[in-house]
Structure formats: C-alpha cells, structure tokens
Image (cartoon, rainbow, N blue to C red; front, side, top):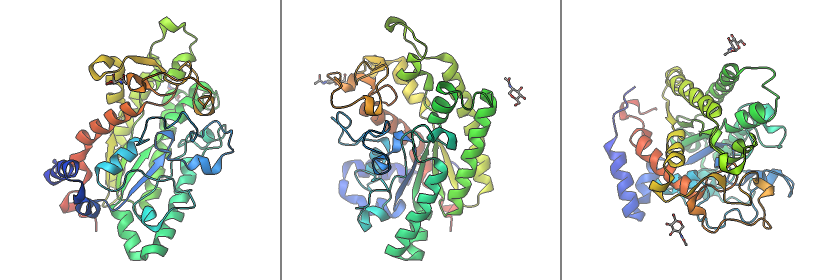
Length: 356
Ligand SMILES: *[C@@H]1O[C@H](CO)[C@@H](O)[C@H](O)[C@H]1NC(C)=O
Ligand SMILES: *[C@@H]1O[C@H](CO)[C@@H](O)[C@H](O)[C@H]1NC(C)=O
C-alpha cells in the first residue's frame, strides 16, 4: 500500500484553518464522520440509555465547564470542516443534515469485550454495529440508497475502544483475569477488534482509523488502585507496558486486516505517545499536575462521582486529567494536533485506490 504523503490534504488543512468557508471542498472528501467507541468519543449516547444516576453519564456540571468542544472527535470534525460537534446517534431530535454528516455511536464504559459493558450498562461495540446498521437505513431514507452508500464509503470512521476492556474486565475486576493471562486477553480483544472492522466493512465503511490504547497505567484511577500515599503516586509501569505491547500487536495487525478487505484504508492512531509525552514533560506544554484529576480529590472521582457538588481545580488547563479517568480539553487538543500531523497526509486514500 502506497503511504506517500498526500499534499493535497496538507494543503487542504492549512486552507481550512485559515479560510473557514472553503468547507464545501472538504465535504466532498469526507462527507461524514462516524465514531464508534467508548467515553473518549461518547457524545452523549449514554444520556439516552442510562438512568439519571448512572455512573457513566457525563451530562451534568462540572462536565463541559470550559469546553466549547468536548471531544477530540469534535475537534477533528471541525478541522475537516464538517461540523463543530458530532452528535450522539441516539438523540431522537437529529436533523437530516446532522444525520448525513455523521454521528457518534460511542458509549462511555464500553469495550470490544461484551463483558466490559455489563457493570455499567454501556453499549458494547458489538451493539454499536447494530446502531450503525440502523443509521445507514435512516440516511437511505433521507438521501436514497445510492447516495447513502457513497456517504458511508467516503466517511471517515474512527474507532476508539479497548481501554475499558483492560481497566474494567482485567485489572479492576477479576472477570477475565481468571480466564486469560495478559497475552491471551490482548489477543482476545484484538480478535474482537478484527471482527468488528470486518463487520463495518461489510456495511460499506472504507476509511477507518483505529486508535490504540493510552498509557493506562497513568490514569489517576489506576494509580489509586495501588494505594500509594499522595507523594508516591506514579504511573504503573506494568499496565503501561501491557498497553504498549497491545499497541504493537494492533499496529502489526491492521495492515493484514486492510489487505484482507478490498478497497479499504485502515490507519493506526497512536494516542499513547502524545499523552505519555505530556505526562513525562508536563512543563513544556504548560501543564503542572499529571497524577490526579481536576475534579474533586482527583484520585477517584469520575462520572457521577464528579458532580455539581464536587469542588474542582481552578485552571483545568494545568491538569493532564479532568477526572480520574479522562484527559482535559487541553490534552485532547494536543492529541488532535499530534494525530493530524501523523495521520493527516494518509487520511485520503490514494487516487489509484479510488475505492470504487
Ligand atoms: C498465556 O497463556 C497461554 C495459553 O493460554 C500460554 O501458552 C502462554 O505461555 C501464557 N503466557 C504467559 C506469559 O504465561
Ligand atoms: C491556565 O493554565 C494555562 C496553562 O498553563 C495558562 O496558559 C493560562 O493562562 C491559565 N489561565 C488562568 C486564568 O490562569
């Protein structure tokens, strides 16, 4: 596969960032953005399935306090000139235009492993495929079958999942640890990932970006599980090393998956490196606190435990983590910029492969 930088795309990004009304040309390259995954990309689907007190809703203050864009995916949608935010598919009020330019199927607390979603009631990846199928049927009714096919074929599809599988089903609850060793569980998750990509290919998706794992051992909640006193908190090297070896396997797997699915471009998105860079050298980028979140004590609170009554830090931009499990907006921006530089040139399929 030819991975030469596509200068048209770089040019386009520069153009888009300076002249915002060249949106039309961008839309013809990526007519839609489709997002599947977990909380890093959940635009609010859980608010439509979960009871108010559910632990994995984040539609209450202080979530969204100083974030005009909540998610890296919104930042990307904005960069490619599509829209300012990617709405949740389960929102019943979406307009035809919002639907045809793309939605998020993401659900906080979900994973490739169906077991992962059980404790939280999230929508597992297996079920998100079903939602994608319903979505396609809906846009077929709006623009016709032929146009719908074209939209799906050209849409940029982002997959971000897996973190919860390791955090929930392996490290923090023993469910899968009793059954698999780390190598075995990594391979299990990767098999699920591969079938997932095959299923969405079957539905017509052709431009797919798959994110790897972040440095899981640096999530404040994971550090907390080791019961260190506050001055001794540091990233868990074993969990980071598990994430790194998983990412290496994923990176090796994707070209094989791509080769087995005709007309497809599948890219690996490295989110580990930029986040680890920030944790290792926070000061270079204006950060001060790396080992706890901005919300509450920062050691434990996430979801409903970080709520309107929880005190928060003054300036979230100085924190890598917003709560004990999720980065701040400033980090999302950094990761977005990093990925754009890494992947931007490869996002548009080679004309030779004009995936017809
Ligand atoms: C993990 O389990 C597999 C079999 O399930 C075994 O072949 C392998 O040696 C084990 N790896 C380690 C590091 O224990
Ligand atoms: C918050 O922190 C960021 C990053 O260190 C800094 O650029 C900004 O000026 C701070 N804002 C306030 C209001 O102190």
